[in-house]
Image 1: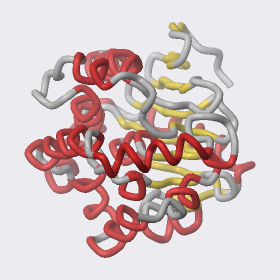
Image 2: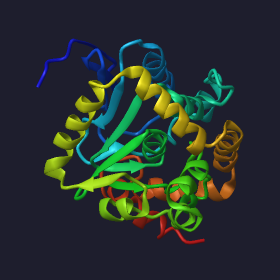
Image 3: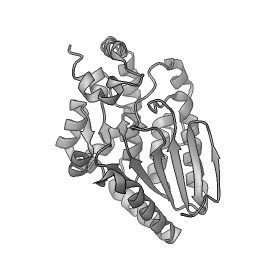
Image 4: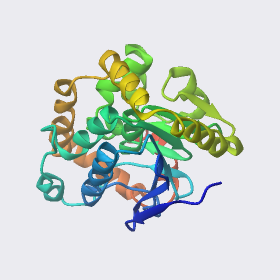
Length: 282
């Protein structure tokens, strides 16, 4: 394995330049990789670097926290912190802006999913060009409807294009966990692989793409984007709907009930969130 040429890090989201042409972004937000408003500018800065670097051709997103890719948004952070983050260059709010820009960047993005990709984690994976999952350890979900919320990072626009309307509605409205093999069958991920093979497969694919011509990669991706990516007008309402739902009494009551069960802490609720949102009742 080639040693990284150069890298820089924040405490919680690290960008490692393994080669000038191949980067890794690693999420390290223990204990359960919860993503909050303070992470929005960090992720946006990384996507700006991906967009503007003249050499990078492929970037892999992974996690350093056992059992978690990225879970959900930080519901303990004051709402004002999220509202204070300005819109991005697309005019969308920060999270959807960053994810839209990642999808359109002239660089191949790959999500390597070992553990939970729940809420924001699922939305980042969906915004990536390819998704590969550990058969034994990957769990994807859009859990929000079970807590009285509306997902905010683009899954309503992206999931039907990947798996069709019926399966997208099943994922969104059941708010349940989708394990690696089913995620592959539904088209949620490209492939699920035995956990012992995931890292080697993703590394080999990334290194292969990193040897190809950047202009050919960028132009091919641009043309696929025309045929497959949702327009911004479909993405914009989702974040607004998420914030509006967050203020509703039904959502506040359900989130409070989840907190009482152990939400936001290591343990069974974070490990089996799909099960627990199904136990909240009316």
